[in-house]
Length: 405
Image (cartoon, rainbow, N blue to C red; front, side, top):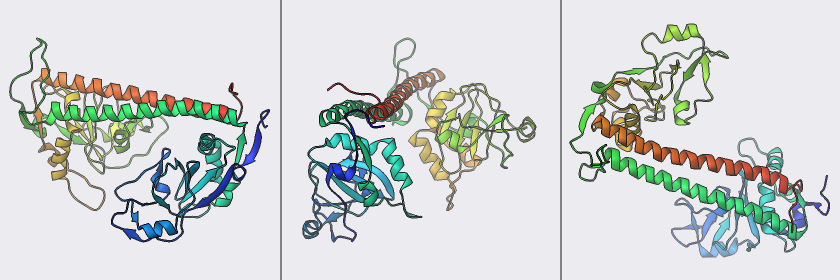
């Protein structure tokens, strides 16, 4: 149902031209400042120029120029589908995997951008794709895109509201990036920096920690085990079974289960306990997670288990295992095969870790945990903003929620 005062129009009615880039290979040069742009260069509303983006000679650029203006929206239509970017005067030559939409003067450019970005439009494009290996979106389909169109003042108001949410999302993303960089620098300073550059925290008396750090092999510090070597039969409910994906995705919610009988049979050597550490040792090597909850679980051979004991703080050792310095140790000892990469338990046991006093370990771990919690809070805020914006787009772009002009 079309809202009162709105019209259901096709995209070609709201545009002066819809076309794509060149279907041939231009002449490349080492440097010209004119870039050959395809659909994979269109990300989050902007044209992204990377080190791998090729330069086009001036003659070819003039020959293949497309009529791009400040009212042009670019969209990826081959391989990667539906990514959008505004054209802001960049010196570019478009390839065939990018199309351009010149929005008519009677229509708000930002409104069309959000309409194209909406889940309804993206779902329509997905249903219209052609090609088996590489998916393609035709210009005919793009031109026939149906867009609910309010009067221009209402278009502008809707675009302004959604733009405010985009700014909030962008700011939060930058805060997350900055916080991750700060945490990375903090790990370097607290865990693995050179002795003369290492940042020392304050002890309980308010004085900087002193004393040398001990450098010790992992095998002398704790016992290390691998998991079951056979893929078990999964059941609907039972004992959780962990593998590489749980650590690399930091998500234990999508867990498969094995029966109690299989668990008792396969896990006679070792039981998972609170403060034990799991680390990936096949494929994506060196991602570690401390088990900070009571758990009865089994794990696959692709993981290594570091048993907790009184010699170290488990959170500290987890951060150290995740550090670049420890990863360099692992890499030197990795068995290099075509795929996947792996490291034996014996090699892991010969890797060195640096240990301050237990009190300093605990202080370092607490500081890094606080930094990590700040990042998690920001990431949750970002997820909430994106979800709220998605719901708002659904309401505003369909007229279910009207704005005051």
